[in-house]
Amino acid sequence: MVIFFVLGLVSFAAHGMGDGGEALIIASIVSGVFFTCFLILFTVYWVGYLLKGHAIWLSEREAEPGGPPAGQQP
Image 1 (cartoon, rainbow, N blue to C red):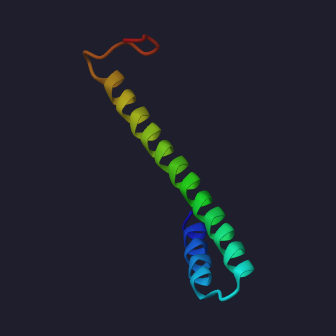
Image 2 (tube, helix red, strand yellow):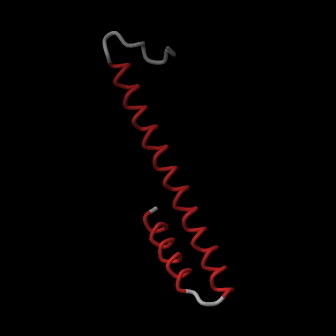
Image 3 (cartoon, rainbow, N blue to C red):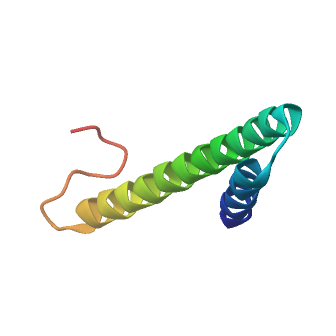
């Protein structure tokens, strides 16, 4: 995820330094692809983090004396 972010920044900087029309278009596309990959990986990471937190919360809730029995939906 961090690698795609850095590559996106580098290609965006190359976009700013480009002096030809074709080079600017290619650098724009490449930086857009890298930032898109970064956003996708960032989203996958946070969804996984939230699901892990939910699983921990659910297991703690089931372990409480007054909690629902395991396998029973609330």
